[in-house]
Amino acid sequence: MSSLTPSTQHDQSCRLPLARAGLVAKGILYLSLGILAVSLATGGHPSGEVDKASAVQELADLPLGRWLVLLVVIGLAALTIWHALMAFTGDPVRGDDMTDKARFGILTVLYGLTTVGAFRVLTDVWRSGSGSSSGSGSSGSETTASVLLDVPGGRIIVAVLGLALIAYSARQLKKHTMDEKFMERLDTSPLDNRAREGVEKVGRIGYLARATVSTMVGIFFVAAAIQQNPDEAGGISQALGTLAGSVWGRLVLWLVALGLVAYGIFAFVEARFRKAA
Image 1 (cartoon, rainbow, N blue to C red):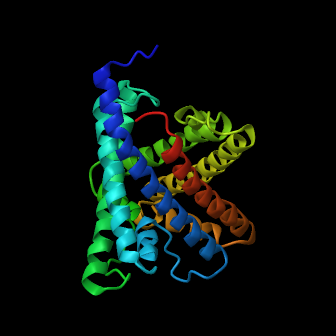
Image 2: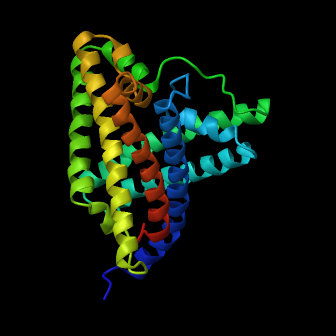
């Protein structure tokens, strides 16, 4: 017998469409990131910019791209609202203690910023009729580090942020790539064993790729703190660009690129089979 009250069940049934729409948008975004990373690995992406804003701009360049970007913006907004709700009430699958709610709050801010960035691309596209964006300059990571390094104790704050990101990446690696905890979010009863094993492999590869990139970003933050140079605090672009700079790094870049594609596919799978929201 379910322990959920009728009001809680109704709340979850209202939130599940938000979750599904958000996860589809997340899947599109990570697929685009993976494709950009593949292009970087093959030398076909000369600008070297592989981040979420660039991924949205790539979508805008497709036929009917402005409408696709519009759908992505709506989906990302749904993803943000869903995480904001979880920050207050918790999640029936991933937990509802204060640590979980704090994590959902941080994700709300991050997804909100991604939504704003995608919306800016959308407005540029709608005004100009093309996928090009007028935005340029430092990455968000460099900007954040630059601001923090200018405040008292900024070096310590930046270093702690970097170490926290590395620790979080290690936790995600253990939790999802090794222990496959992500499967607890899914109702895979409609799938046969072979399909379920495929979902497990895609999820593990996807989380491995994310952990690899976020670990490198954390290392860049620590380097920025040590050298007092915000330019060292690169984001996804710098992480993947660093990998592209050597033969062995390019091999890892290929694996990360395919892993980002795998994570995008897993987001679609989760949108379809998520137990509750």
